[in-house]
Image (tube, rainbow, N blue to C red; front, side, top):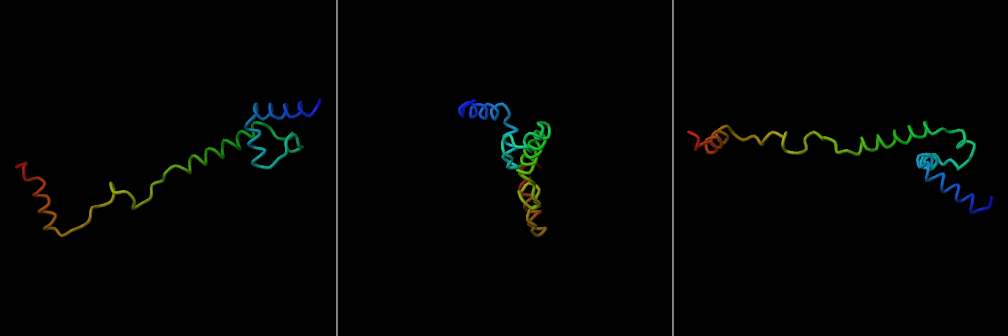
Length: 94
C-alpha cells in the first residue's frame, strides 16, 4: 500500500461517512486514533444532530415583548380626541 492508496482511503472514508468527519473535527480526534476506533456512528450521529437541532432552534427569530406594533396599544390621548376620531372614522355609516 503506497501513499496514494492511503490518501484515497482517507478521502473515500470521509466522503462515505461525513458525520464521522464532522464529529472528529468537533472534538479534534485524529483519524484512526484509539478514540476514533472506539467511537460508534450512532453516538456520533446523535451528537451532530443535537448540535444542528439546537443551532436551528435558537437561530429562529424570537418574540421580544414590546417590539412590533400589532400588539402594542395605541398612544393614549384624551377622551375628547378619541371620541372625535371615532366620529370622523364612522361618519358615513349613519
